[in-house]
Image (cartoon, rainbow, N blue to C red; front, top):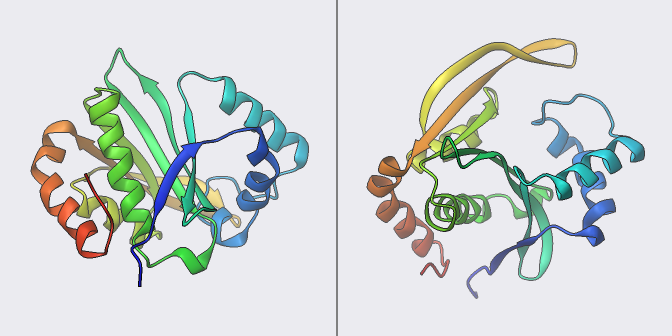
Length: 188
């Protein structure tokens, strides 16, 4: 079996329709803050703003040449040396192969390396335990519990706030890298 080949490429116009389809998938939308089907007009407004906003950056996640998900940075602040991030894998068949872990490693390296920031943070619905535990395995620390922070399906949901400092990453990097290598990923 060959090692999985994951690439993050810049999101572009050719991804417009695919992303709306992905965002409306039940396996994706269940973890998002919004709770409705995203219309073409709403999606076009989001997509156009995403491409134009210098405080946001989006990548399409590809596995062995096939688009499988989206990763992004938001609220990029050079002044405060921090940004937020999120990702999703659109296909359930891709999950469990270490793709999310590879994306996490890549994004952390990009934020602390290429961008030279000091903090990466995120918010995760509390019931999305697999994702917040993945973040914690990369050195993220729980910094907040936002009670009744979003409403989904007519019910309040709590959200976990997690943060990773550049110093935290310096301590977690080697073990995180080794886990990916053990899964067959080529990590520089």
